[in-house]
Image (cartoon, rainbow, N blue to C red; front, side, top):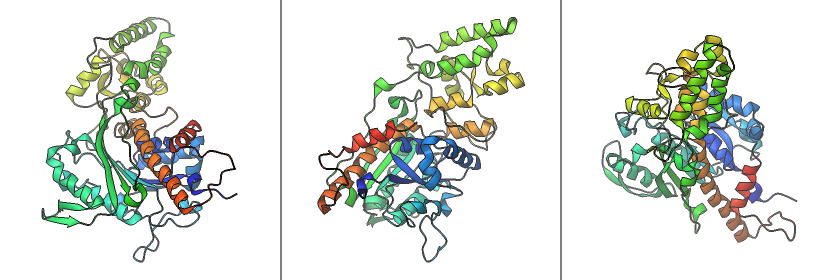
Length: 435
């Protein structure tokens, strides 16, 4: 019996994919990636290496194309001007070159510096603003849904007109053109902006204060009479740095606590000090949650945990923010324990521990040298937040499939007497299959 369209995977393409934070979350929400586009060579290798080796990414091994290059040059569909454009590897699904309006989700964490409070907030005047490129791809692909992630700063009053322009491009309306400030009416691309709100990562189990602004738009013909439900914050899911890092921190100190002599004694003293400084107590005003992890850029030397205020906040959690520690193996080999673990300001974070603070699964590993790895982690979109938004989008897309099948009186592909699972059940089943 042939499969119902409801049984086909939800497909996605992601631009500015970075080291995979958003891709992981959307994957966990039930999406299968046809393409991941990223300009940083270390990040693209991170994506390739993990997809090659992780068992639960076998679908992507067969169908996903990792594209290393500028998103402005990315042309997913062939046309008269670009006959060689298009995605080659995904041809196995859906069995032919991808066509307009076939993709389920176009997602992207467009660069944050144009809107970040830590930068000059040049917005549309910043050459790194990739909203225009994203809108071009929406017009080209006409995906069923769009998800755009950025920093909270884009919600500032100074960007009201630019946000109005982006919304008008998607769903129609009057707005000022960014290039000349003239107000015009835009027909729109056929979408409804369902939400452009801010989610706090710590409300989704990420041990870090990391507010992210996320836009969700769904094509009008897909949304119809359905309703998109914004993910509900879950304060009960909050996790402290102490809880998140306890086991990995103990493993780092254990190497030295097992040694005889003064080095073993110092390790025990420092481990005890970290337990005291980082432990959750009712008196902690920060709840034991870390400040925003920052990735920095290639223009600014080595990696650390941010400006003075951020370093001070990390210090209250027993963490030195002055740099990034070597891995356990490299710490022993390079004898860097004095700097990495035994400093007066506490231990520095390793790359793996920074990844825990961002909500990455332990199996996900990063390519490049230590600083390059840390920047990939620090600039990422926390996977648990991407998963929450992805599940909310998937609920609508799957419900739309069921609705449209019923309207067309198509067979469901189910055996007689079986009950069709709800969208949420199907997503939970997929998530349960992830290893």
